[in-house]
Image (cartoon, rainbow, N blue to C red; front, side, top):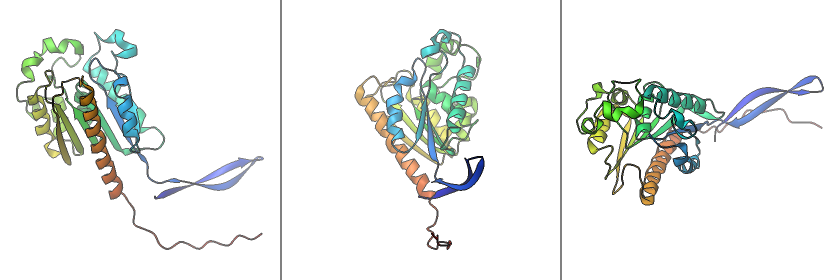
Length: 264
């Protein structure tokens, strides 16, 4: 494993002595989990532990209007929640040991929609979308809970939407990282057409992996569906992270510089 040497000074008895701190040279990927509308971070903590076992630092959090801030549920907007995701992203990137060039975002439903938009505002190397929702760009600052009625979403989500007609799809169309899209076969909230819209928009991605959870509904109410998604996600991230680490492996160094021998 490559290492990094940092020259430091050690305070002792009102003096300073020189030292060299040797640490692993490879920083650790960061993974941000974004839950859906009506959910919470608790749905993703166990899954985050599985991903962390791959050698990642993971962050889950509660969007405003959920969990401890549920009192805001009727007034919070997409703009508010986008700010939440950006703040969580920035918090993760600034954690000690996190590689800011190796960040993954995992978003489900509404969280997937927000995660897609974030790719246009922050560096995202890996994007995993499970049943990503889709909304019209109008009423951006209106309460999110009113959008189903205001935007007639049931009809909208059954129509083809071009990449230029949605902020989330515009972001996907310019995304150059690696993407995973997971569809639930029996999804009544996010129909197959929405998934097709996202897949078409991700045409410029470095790679696009598409999976269908057979028999699963939107909320993955069956334990088998939950396990199935976790398995797909962990295996995909394992492959992505292993490939990135292999590509970053430095050439072997055989010669070592000579240093003076110690004397006693």
